[in-house]
Length: 323
Image (cartoon, rainbow, N blue to C red; front, top):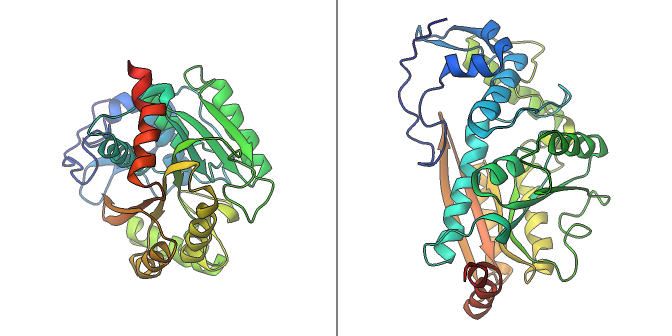
């Protein structure tokens, strides 16, 4: 099969993102042959994946992980969230840059870094990319037992992930760090992709908009092209309430974690988030803009560590092991 792809470089993605260039559809179909059944011309007349179909999106992501990241076994129930790989990779790369900025331009890699993904989900995507790109160690936590078991199976099924990722069940659905980070444990980075919607109705409306943008047609009974069970997509009070709770609890772990971070999708939530961060006596706050496709978002990162403790942290965890 010869496939022409005239899509321009995805210049909004991070420079180290493996998917800045147009998808190599021939290579991806070679990695996952079933993907070939879901290639068709898009509205520009270019051969493309049929993004309106959930099964096509899942097959594409399996192919991306296989071809670019060496992950041969990645599967989970169709009810779970199927993440867009390029956007998830961008979060990892931008936080890696932040880590380097804190370490005089040197990026700590390998076993020196331990990261926590809050809400790892069944797909385990942030730990997968963090391990394969930078060799970091990860903890992935989730409140859903089925998602925890599925993520564990993914780790066990891929030799390049085993021993690098620990999946933990968060038994308290109202907690983020408590019960996951031990009293004297040190975690260099925390990641979080909060639930975006405040209700099922809001989630359905968002899906209808997405499908209309992809197909030009309105769907009465939309099927999420990225799927997702309720706790992955919906939180009472929405994204803002989730992040505010995350920030408040982070204060109790201010000496355990170097950089806390979260995605913030809705710009309207930023004012309240900044106000709370300033009220919490946080030493450093960073805003990192990101953009994938037509969507703009950002990472908010914060640290409670003053300069002296940051230096101590670097010497104990990042620098001394290089000597």
